Image (tube, rainbow, N blue to C red; front, side, top):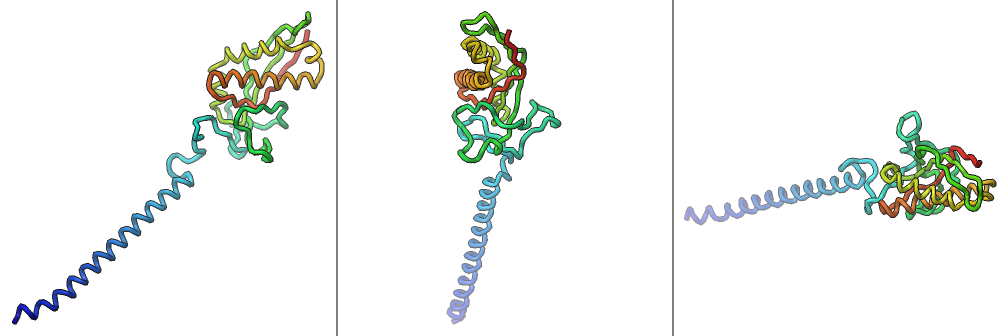
Length: 208
C-alpha cells in the first residue's frame, strides 16, 4: 500500500525537474544566440579584427577617405589636396560618379631627379621635374618606388615622343600630363597589377 501512495507524488517532481531543465536550456540558447549576434555586429562594425579600413576584397590598394588624409604637419609623403586634379586617369577603380575627387584624400610624391629628353623632330630638349598624386593608400607609392627604374624609363620614352609645339602651350602641357600618367600607370599595372596614379604635376619645366 505504501508503494502505491508514493507513486502519485513522484510524477509532479519529474515534471517540475523537466520544466527546470527546459527553462535552463532556453536561457542558454538565448545567451549563446545573443553572444553570436553581438559578435557578428561588432565584426561588421569594425570593432573586432583590427578596426580602420577593411582590406579590399581583391587585395588591391584602398581609396583613402578625405577624413583620414595625412597633412604635411603629420609627416609622411606630404598629403594634402592642392586644388583640382589636372589630369585624371582611368586606372580601373575610379571613385563613384558624382562624388567628386574631394571625397578622397590625395597623397603627393615627387619623383627624384629631373627628367631630360630630346623633343621629337627638334634640336631642343625638355627638362622637367615630375610629381604624382594618388587617392589610394601608401601601397601605390611603395609600388612606384619599387619600380622606379621602369617608371623613369617609361616617362623618358613619353617625353621623347613629345613635339616642340606641345611643350610650348598650356594645352600641350596638360596633354603631356595625361600621357605621363598613363605611361606610369601602364608600367605599374604590368609590374604590380594595379596603377593607382591619378595625376601628374610638373614641379619644374624648362625647354632649351
